[in-house]
Image 1 (tube, helix red, strand yellow):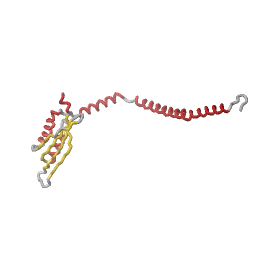
Image 2 (cartoon, rainbow, N blue to C red; image 1 turned 90 degrees about the vertical axis):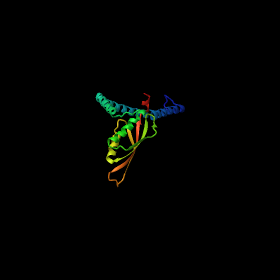
Image 3 (cartoon, one colour; image 1 turned 180 degrees about the horizontal axis):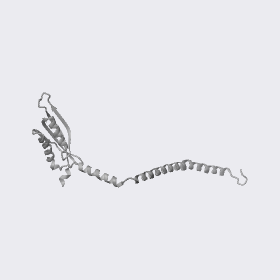
Image 4 (cartoon, rainbow, N blue to C red; image 1 turned 30 degrees about the vertical axis):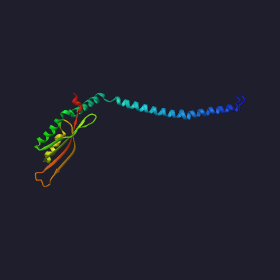
Length: 183
């Protein structure tokens, strides 16, 4: 020990404890914080580079593309009939059969199933006719103004039948807007 600054044992212990605390702070707080800061600085740098690239985008062209896509979507949407207008769907189904020369058909409605934003009106359809006529009639049902879903399709034919007629049994679901009744 130096004669100019004599240190006692307690002072040495305290000095050692302070040095240990400083080393602990550096190891446990400062170094991990510095690593975290470096990682965050790298993220900031990458974000600034991405921002610089995005500034070069033509926002007006993107906005025009979005408006065109929205217009195409709106043109493709089919309206839901009001619940009281479900006869239009039934008439469309029947009309598609009559257009194909299938006059002997049975069309019945089931109990509507109500969901949060719409109602599904089950429709059962049974008719006898040629396969191509049945196929064409069902194609027309799917492209009607109002959305109709084919839930089940069964075609029963007889190999002995020389006319090539099949019995077609179809379960349809017509989507109906129950809120339109309130208007």
